[in-house]
Image (tube, rainbow, N blue to C red; front, side, top):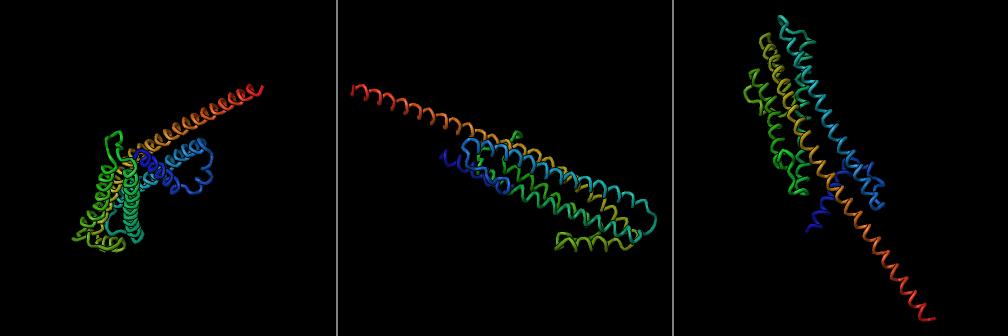
Length: 263
């Protein structure tokens, strides 16, 4: 049972490496303990790179939401109706917020898939915050629900009664812009834009904290497993060498005794 769990963990790590970087994994096998050493280096590099890429994408979203919020706030100071270019800017802002929502959904789906794979291998894992993979998934799903509420609350703010019934982003953007066909409607749409950008910022920040905590901690758990495997293999290799040396010594004694008898 222990060997089967150990092999399952090793296969999980190798599968993760293969998924993340199929090109880098080429040539890693075939060198005894040195191959494990390469694997340690590779998983460290990939884990760090993946986390940094995810976090950088979130950071870009945070900067974008802050910019959109500032732009919409400035629009509130405009007297009278918005110009066509300003309306187009408002529409683009709504679309950007929807794009962020889709990005969050994709990242959380990837995150939850990873957690499900991780918990099937590291069955007793808990992070430094005492969170299991299931608890990480629950937190991620709360962030996802919060993300969905961003757009639905924004649509309700401009007088749309059942935003959850809309099928796609094009319908959502059209509904928001249709509500902005009067000066009063434009003010409401701008206020909704400020609200949505602010809520999206909070969603992204929550996701950033979750990824920083969970992925960094779990990559450490995988690294520990690999390093333990490396130590165990090196011990095994040392024992094998010792056995070979003893066999050679015994063979030498036997030859010496045989030669003595002949004399």
